[in-house]
Length: 292
Length: 276
Image 1 (spheres, rainbow over the protein chains, first blue to last red):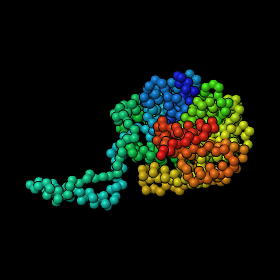
Image 2 (cartoon, helix red, strand yellow; image 1 turned 135 degrees about the vertical axis):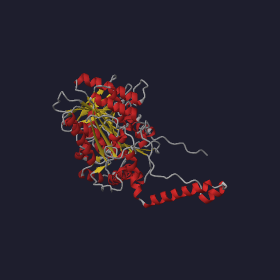
Image 3 (tube, rainbow over the protein chains, first blue to last red; image 1 turned 90 degrees about the vertical axis):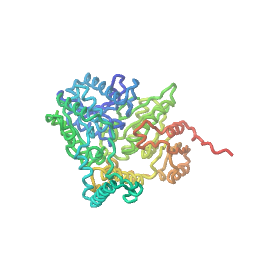
């Protein structure tokens, strides 16, 4: 395995590190590891470096890229939004790599915003033959809420409060029908009870497109033969909290066996623990070998 | 900015050379010494901006990754302090080769300060050393990182996915996503800048955000060794390692200006007091 630094893109300003295997098979795609948030090309916990080298050991060329305005790549000067700029950057990098190596397509890898960028590019650029997305788009499902609120149902206090409030409501309705002054009713009933407060579930940390639109995008990718590996962690329990929730989110999509999925129920979003990092690396390398 | 690989074939290091801008340059080079582990990731943006500011001021600058870190070869598990010190020295030689500068300075951030000092010792081409919010006691620093490590996992997992499962006790061989070998842990633990003999280092800039007792003791220690000390106190406006800083375009501008001043021999700017 050897590595070299490249300056890619139309202006040759996008700093990238290419990891190359000793022997490169021509029928394999090149992997491109995208920035996670604005962490530079080494990735959170240096994970992108480890993954690129592991993929190179497995026989894949792998590029770690700083998008415009991140890490050591300067911002674009064409006043594009971050999303547009990322898509334009990746397209230019694919052009360069295609001219240099003529690979059999590209696989995009992204965590968080990197996964969002990967999905956007994959549906626009037919050179993308695979994607690995960690904590990418997903939606809460009925089972998500059950998983989320379910543990509370084992607590007697929750049932006691529920019963008390239900009783108050019935009593309130009966009393409420009687022609009594409001002040007297409030004295008897107390003021309007609070909503039942469960664990707060914040809004999505990122703005996802509608489920219908994303379902269409996924179906388009599957129909095009794009192989996808969707991974989620407990770090994103704000919207994802059980194995195979992905498939419940997108029930209308016929994945035709093109999609693999894993849920890391005991890992945080950036795989802080070294043991979890190793599992992730093994999973991605194993998937790459199986699918390409 | 020119990316480059240097070092031996068994230990290839990655660096970024920022050539001096404007003519003529100062004929001086600056090596930026990264902090340890997660702090190096968080320092990336601040170091990039510091390098740009120094290049604009006429210095040739080299940012680089120690062996087993960042874009350099190797695994973090195999890193040793002696090797990292040698890497910083090799980086200085590489910068001289690439730019032709006659003298070099070292700027360290956090634990990078210890590496900057050790790499600078005995160099005949040394200009000065700048210590940016230095880790004074290695042992106390590792204890702090271990606490952060546990707190992070507790926040990220117990309150979210792992329910009531206990977080496994810290093995001490990993800190905030980065490995640390038993040997490296022992080496870092043994460091204490207040007991360091600075030898041939004669000019030191000290940029601190808090005037803690340890920092004041370090300043006193430096002065006791007849070192010309340029001590700046930059109260934290933008903390270089905060989540706000890493997720935005914020950079610690005041600290960067203080470092540029310290390298050019300018004393710390005096703050205006209340006039009677």
